[in-house]
Each structure stands twice: as C-alpha cells, then as structure tokens.
Image 1 (cartoon, rainbow, N blue to C red):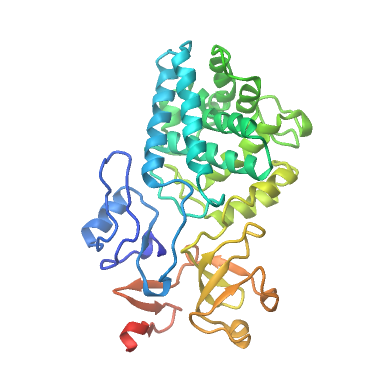
Image 2: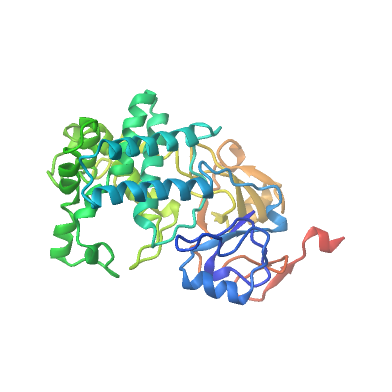
Length: 394
C-alpha cells in the first residue's frame, strides 16, 4: 500500500483504499478499482489530496487505522446531529446531553479496542464535512494524548467530550464567515474569535456538562505565553484540558484542506509545533502529543538526508521523526552501509544509521518518484530511469 499525492496519480493505478466524500453515500472510487482519466478528474473536482494505491514495492505494507472509514462517517454523522441540536435551540434538552456523551463513549470504545494508539494514516478529508470531521479528530487526538499521559478513563472521557465540543460556539458565528472562500478580514476574525465565549454560553445552559468541559472549550485558543484568546491568560492559569485540546486543534486544522489553502504535511506541522513550544504550547504536553501522531505516515515515500529514496513501513512512538523505512533507491551513505533496494532500516534503533535523517516527504518535492502501470520510475530532472519490478525481471 503506497500513498500517492493527487498530482502524481496516474490512470492505470489500482486503488488500495476507498475514497469517499460527504455528499456521496457510495465511495467515489472503491478498493481494487483501476483509476481512469475520468476518475482522476472527479478526484480533482472534489479536491481529494491523494490516494493509497497498490504497488509492488509496497507489498506487505498495511496501514493500521485507529478508526475505520465507516466508523468515521458514523461518528461525524452523530456529531452533526449534536451540532444541529444546538443550532435548533434544543440546548436545554437532557436528550441532547445524552447524545453528546453517547458519541463520546462510542468514540472511546472504538479507539480503546485497538492495539496501538498512534494516528498513522493520511486521512482523505473532504472540505464540505470539515466542521464535524475536525471536531471528531480533535476528540480523537485529545483522547490519545490523555491515554499517553496516563489519565483515568473518567478524565479521558471528559477530555474527549471537550474535544468533540470545542468548536460548538461556531454555530453562533454567521455562516458566510464560516464558509468564506478565503482568509477572514479583521472584523470577521474578531467575530470568529468569539466562538469560545459563544460555546460556553450554550454549554452553561446544560445540566450535566462539567466545569472541566466548559473550561477546556473556553480556553482552547489560549497560549502559554499569554498571547492567545479570549482571556489572554498564560502558563498554569490555562486549564490543563484546554492546553491539550489546543495541540489537537492546531494539528488537525493545519493538516486539513481549507477553501483558501492546501493541507500541510504532518511533518511540517510537527516542526511548526515544536517551534512553538513554550510560547504557544506547553512543552511537556507537546512531547506527549508528538507520540500519538506520525510525522511520516506508513505508505509515504520519503527522501533521506543522503538522497536515498525510501518507503515508510513502520513508525516509532519514541521518535516520530525516525521511522522504519524500506529502501527504494540507496544514496551514497546508505549504500556504503550495505543497504540496497528492498532493505528495511530502522532509523531509530539501528545505530549505524544515526547520521541519516528523513529530509522530506516526496509529497513536498517538485520532482519525485511515481508509479505508472506497475513500473517504478525515478524522475531526477534528467532522463527517466526505469527500474523493472521483480515480477517483470522474472
């Protein structure tokens, strides 16, 4: 299973995972389908960022999901019902409170049933369903962080619920601002920045919503140096759960496609967040958060510091920037260490490779590897070199 960004998808590639869109009950393209030019046009039309395809060099590489596509759709639909409940002024209803906690419990049961807690997949998110998928992922990332921190199940439940509800105040922000196709003006941004206050006003009308949830929702845009909003509080004055949700909120927002910009790659967001330690984010919480997100998800092609081309096949929670990779085309240093095409290298545990780092994902490079009809090509800006697959060599 290999991840290929949209600009490098080619007709003839076979899909390894389905691609869905919120407005369609059936997948746009299903597992096992061979991509055609017509399908590619549809993917561009729906602004799909990329897809997982079948490829010989990625044989045996499987992406483990914390939550399946079907489960994501179900949770997002449940969240839509909760948000609509607030929008329709049913915010005094005990039923609405029950709905909130049912969604939170369902999500926790799904995630806790898995054998690992690392978000290790490039999710194909659609913009139309952004509000609900974003709230769901903030809930998931907050939950995973809480688990890594060793919080009790009760506290993880509260944290997850707060993550799911962190943007509930946006139901009171005018729709033309929410859906604006471009950056907000200063006056529009001022209105948008009131959404934590709007959310708290709605939550305080509900019996059964804890003070920890209210505090987290109110503070998820505060920064540890005091430059956040709405209160501009700093350090330990910011609620603990609010600091965690701030991490999840920024990570998911930046890795999502918006109407006015493309999604950032996970490693870019991680580097940005590390640069904001002790200013925007709590350093200790950030260290824990970085154990639950993969900088280079399984199935992604990367370039190493010696220009080796490799495929990520496994991630380490101990250091998300140093995954286990399968060598595709060795560079000088990697070749000198005895690695050749097909060699699997653990960049975190194998000491002889400590000087080798991941330089970039090939999603970022202007020119890079791509697949076409089962043949592996290397596009180096010079002449295209064809490396036949093992099956063709036989």
